[in-house]
Image (cartoon, rainbow, N blue to C red; front, top):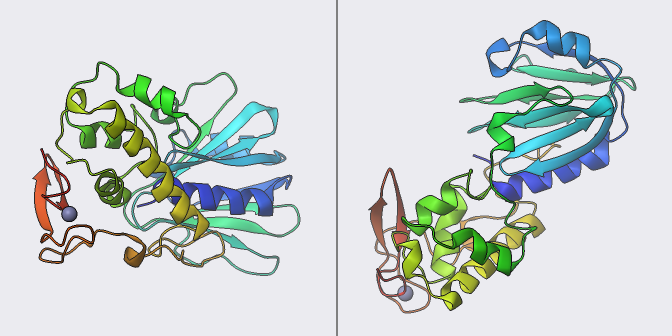
Length: 268
Ligand SMILES: [Zn+2]
């Protein structure tokens, strides 16, 4: 499932490739991914220009002319792939956008996904209600975000309404590098630990972005990213050793999720 690094890389590639292109038509094979009737999209999208493509948490936002937005979420195993003039999108495409120069992109979905059309002055609840982008905030804002919050740090960081873009894959490495146990109550975190956590989010995400994000997602051109498990210091295997202290890694339950930790480096 894409997280912020995958969205950053995808949005950057899309922006470089389709910015200022004019939409001519749209094919929709799966209306349930939409937030409104198919007709609304087939009427609204043609003749609109892609002004900007940007990451929004785990989502991709397309800013179109006349203040229209298209918000895309891929879920697990979904893809957004560019096609050149003369190329035909595959049968499995759920949504296809065609541009006036014969190029376009198609979306395939494996599990679930959304393509939402947001008209001027409309609110898009699923994204507009999300918390700040961790990569564009400063450490002071991050401290303020955690101020007076209760509950465990992991569930806070995974809650998109609090902070957007962190998911189950990167959270393990983020918490390990900060030496913080996932179930630590937020009020128990010291100023230094919160600083470390903030640094850790930035270092993990930026490392992945520099490597075109994770190997398990395809980019806009169908290529896989270069960020693999080898780039993570803590492995996803019980019994492997912590690279810092050589303690055996163990898997623990963290509410509805689970993850690997070093119980010596990450104490409760
Ligand atoms: Zn350790």
